Length: 639
Image 1 (cartoon, one colour):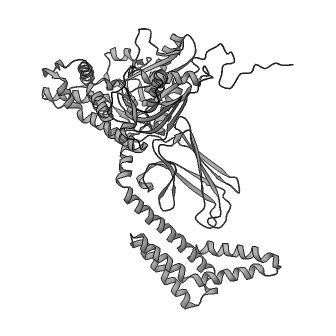
Image 2: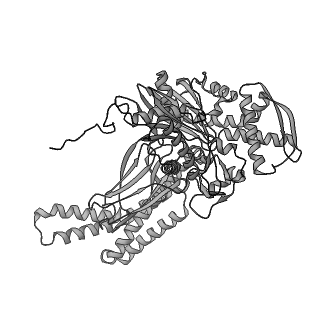
Image 3: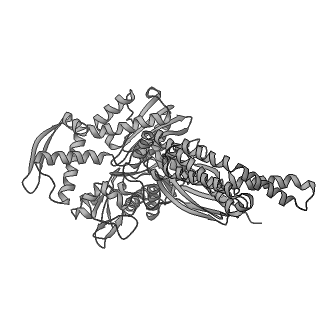
């Protein structure tokens, strides 16, 4: 008899053996890897003792890419030394126009669907650059932990859309990492603080990193972390503060531009040093110059620095107001404010956020490391090392997901801020008689019209049984997994035919587009509802016109004399004219009603004729079913 070694799903087959899993914070400026060791999570240093890796990759022809500190220390061509690639994760060529990266790097936008950095070692996409960073972190973890990794939890900004999340997963695959889960950065921070401090209530996670900003409200109670709402800006971060200081240095020197890319890189590094020094000092001496003889010799005070970056800090408070509105939470209901990201070390940021929420901010865990620590805690659970853990993470969708319906309208299937993972279905039907296929258009956004939302994917469901309009029953299912990735499927119930699509768009939203979409949805709410009502009435009018015209073509001469047919024809012409010219829903509605009333006698004659035909040669027992069928066909033609 053969013996099987049995283990619980997700747990090691040797209970005493831990599976090696890590949490990775893949940042715009710096990246970290952390793991749970001896019961506590900590960041893993590399062989030189560095706890973070600069998110920088240098490409040299024919050589292995230099990553992190090695890339920063190199004196090679700065255009082949890629920084802040995270800003382009999942983005397309159209997004380069709004990115400062386009001013510092040369891009190839023709060879593939993603823009690629042109380097000495060939073209490299943001996915390639991120994969090199992740591979470096993977090596550090395996050397430190002394074994092969079973998997990793990789963090992403809460406002990363589907394409950006998929790009992150692709980068991890290239690096040889198994992704246990993509985890929103604010949620990772909540895990770290919630487990360490056993905080309850509603917590705001203010995450200002190198290139992105997120603000999330989480309800924390007994091991459950539920994201109530999230907002942010995918193109705002510490890089922008550094760039503001670079511009200030140029203004002080009286120059409009820097001589070359190497000077740009050196100047930005110098500006970052000024920013960091002002986080601890009230003033700092500035001594900067270039090879052309331009110099800046002055003192920069914290007050002057605060005035310089105040617009950027103020820009982060707008999403803070938005997230409170979305969650229907008052400021005084927020019990704690957690600061995440290196840019939150700037005193002005802490002061303004504390003033906004009316309470001191929490910084007891290193804001640069808290995300990686939270990810490591979650990775330890998902690897099966803590089977008794009651930790539960509930993230949300940042934007509504839905389908295009007749009239160019959006039918929302999963509203924004819905807890994920989620599967939600909705039933649709055919518009025309004999329709055997349906084109489905998946969209994302908050507006009522498709033209105002973002197109995600299109696919077709074929093989629908040919029946009268409205008879088919088509179940459309939206499924968003724990990583925020969407699958849409459609099933025709009678035939069982099915079609599906994994939504993996070629590029993500442009910088700030999510914030713009949310703001526009509120600014145009009343206008959008009026447009939707108008379009719905036009769809109804088109349906009535199509049904009446089809009926007239079929048997109009049989049931109508010339005068009656001319009268209905005049009503048809009048309705078409109103649909084409009027912007008033009520006017179109009255024209539809006039046509229905004007053709009511004709519809009744058709129904009676259909009943007589169906009853011919049948017994009394068949009368009820014949009448029902005739009524259905007559109504389908008219309604």
